Length: 349
Image: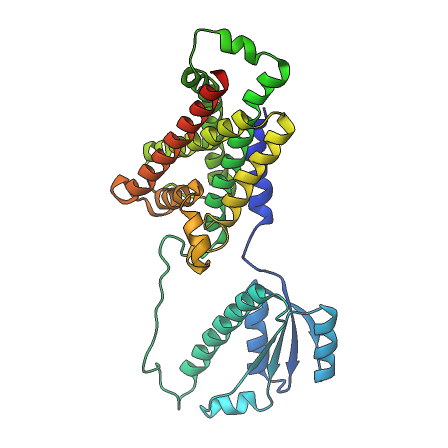
């Protein structure tokens, strides 16, 4: 029940809670022109869907007070003579003040504000008879794979890798330890099976359940968050299977080392939670990490799974593009299973 329903529940909770799309930004306005042009500029901010009007300020003291209290995150300062200068074709400076206590939020808000002002500026430029109809150099940007720049399309694949890794490692990490605590490990040792057969027997049931759970997470993400599927379902199934085998192998290795379920659970969380969240490229770009940490990321299977998963669902790539990631995950899975088998063989001998 935990393997089937908890991952989907986590996906829904985290998918709605984690978002880099900032809305309802409280903005104050200092309108020193009080003209139709200034009201049009203010309306362009409020009608964008990102900004909410918070206050009408008259002085710098009002702005400082509202900023210090956290009541606003941005201020639009419109100079006097805006309409007159626009009609004559002159450039008018408009000021945007931002609360920079959160650098990421401030950067996003700045991008919103600049886009709105540029759009409104082009509108005035076309209306002004004395202004050129088009700038000498223009930029037309096009975003591939995620035209709306929805953060969900970036976060949801990372959440899938994160949830699948944690649930798979934790579920198998306590499996062999449970045999030890119940005293049934001695009976297993007397059975006519070797360590590898025992490891495979412990892995296959959890693999089937975890694979069903992983596919269910993908389907929930498609329904709830609009995650596309531009690639092959068969290739997605192969990629997820390799990732799961590695995660289950890691859990079995931990289970063969720990002596109690509590210790196994703690080691499993430490080995799966932090690397997948911090060192896989899920949240923090690997290219921005120090050289030492970038070297460690090569041992994190979620790094390769994220590249393959995003390539399949967002870009529709084929095996010829992600074969290196699949080979690396295959090697990681084989190493984990061999280490777990060797550890158990040493304990049985």
